[in-house]
Image 1 (cartoon, rainbow, N blue to C red):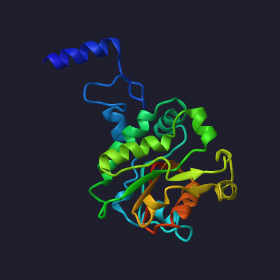
Image 2 (cartoon, rainbow, N blue to C red; image 1 turned 180 degrees about the vertical axis):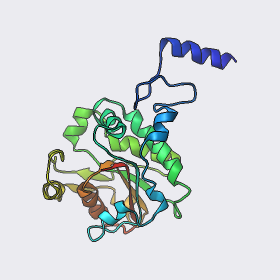
Image 3 (cartoon, helix red, strand yellow; image 1 turned 45 degrees about the horizontal axis):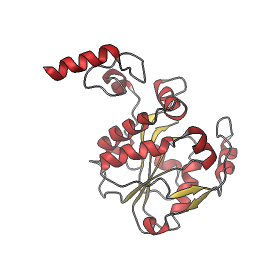
Length: 227
């Protein structure tokens, strides 16, 4: 009873709102309301090992599994959540989605991962933004999957231009040879889960996976959304 009164009192002066629809959250809800969560377009790729995301990488890089939580649509709630995560200083959205997604996929993972590695930002972009949105997603996945994560497994040695408005070929050329392996001793022979916020052509993830594959053949990917 006392805890309910305390929650009601706090909510009166510090109301919390859903990051997807801006309606007030009720007790027990965190960041995204129950209705919005139920309506977000889930991919359910974890139920199909040879899903469409994994097929995108056939012949380009070898993946054990490919996971994506949501389908990206322009002007939809998924785009709104990703925009807030990347540009509105809300890394907690990434952590939340990572925890939710980890809880969804952990029972379908036959062999646990040894390490989670987020796709890195270039240091100038990281300094400007203050955080890497993929780190936040990795943190949430790490908690749910009980798997360690490191933010410096790979280094982005060249600052690529934004991928927005680039053609498919330009995207591939834009990220070729821009990553460097750092933690080779931690990665060698390990089962790696490589994570990013959104996958479009897959050029960035392919470039990262190919760098990691120098030390291990056991690579899977997980993203918040797939376009």
